[in-house]
Amino acid sequence: MTEKAAQVDAAESQSMLPLLEHLARAGRRAYLNEMAPGGLRPRHLIALRLLADLGPQSQLGLAEALSLDPSNVVALLKELEERDLVLRRRDPQDRRRHIIELSFKGQDEVVRSLARGVAVEDHLFAALDSDERATLFELLRRAVGTASPACSSDDTPAAD
Image (tube, rainbow, N blue to C red):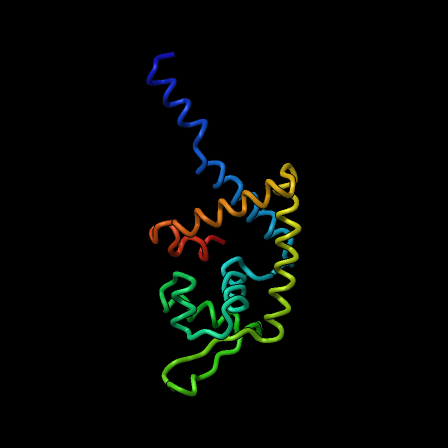
């Protein structure tokens, strides 16, 4: 094997992106299997979880938090409203704006989705002990925090 071929082999053996992609696909499949037929899609759950974490948001604020174009958020919110998971009301301070908040049904769905997520994670990360899982979580959290906008734009919410 030439020196250049050895360098390529070494670089490929340390490449994390294929592993992360494989794990993401496996996790997405397992998570979707945990959901009821006709259940919510990942982008719906991401929006619900953001509302649970951030509280009521303006429609524009939610679009920014989701890194989505505001026109895409309108369709997403329509789907969530049809399922009675969010409430959309006019902002009393500015009647041109809408405020979005979780309904009681939406709050329940967030709790159920978190439980399903824990079950999937337990399966995906069964080979890791609790300290290793905590370390992995912290490393991924830090990596996500430094991801460029090009890496974290519409990819996450739309990947379903």
